Length: 345
Ligand code: MG
Image (cartoon, rainbow, N blue to C red; front, side, top):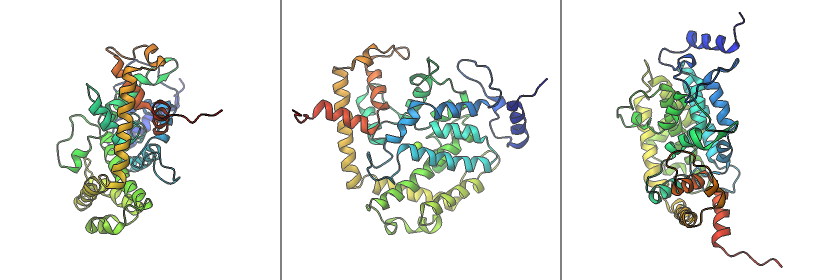
């Protein structure tokens, strides 16, 4: 009998990975059972489905911190995602965790992000009668909103879906709180990698935008973590790899304290600072006005759309439509709906 390449790969995982890793062969499976692939493990297939999805391509025009940036070197949600992937894969590989599962969770963790980053998320959460959260929306994207081969959803494995849902829960490690029951080491690694990526690149982008200088940052943290994004990522990644043991994902204490201090600085001083906050207020107004407009004048294709899940009501459809928009799409829609056009003839 011919042994399939996937089976050889699964055997290699059993031999090489840590006892705390999720083995592909032990996956709890998909919502709809499928035949196995001859070459790829279940987590490798999930990763490929995510990269080929439309929601993944839209990340290139969604905000990280700076709205619809014109400068070529600012991060977008797509480059943020790729930085999270690289950081998470390095940590996962060094801890002998399942790198393919880690990669699939990292690639999909922000698929449900709204236009205009967290400003858009906050606006939708306040407007919606049932609340809005980007982690839950990311799960809704892969389970319901994306289409594959004419069917609803990407039909991903339980482990990737759980990782997406819990991708913000790794903050338990930063704050010394108990982690959610049953969360995988791979999901925790993605969650910490998300923090490492946004702290380092938001500082780097803010220095590029000349709204921050390295001298303003807490000096103790910078002396431990380094001055450049490259040095900071390197130190933080080492802090996780060397701080973790026996299936417990942890960070070396002095590096952990430096990360917390830097993160606090960003949330208390940088994000609320005038140059960022004034654009965020405008972005929230765009989302609010589009929401109210579409609730009273739903676009024809939204109305004709089959309900994607049980209990889909107009508000749910409007939320999905708005959350799926890129920054540019939302700004163009706003311009067409609310601003007068110049007369051409
Ligand atoms: Mg993220």
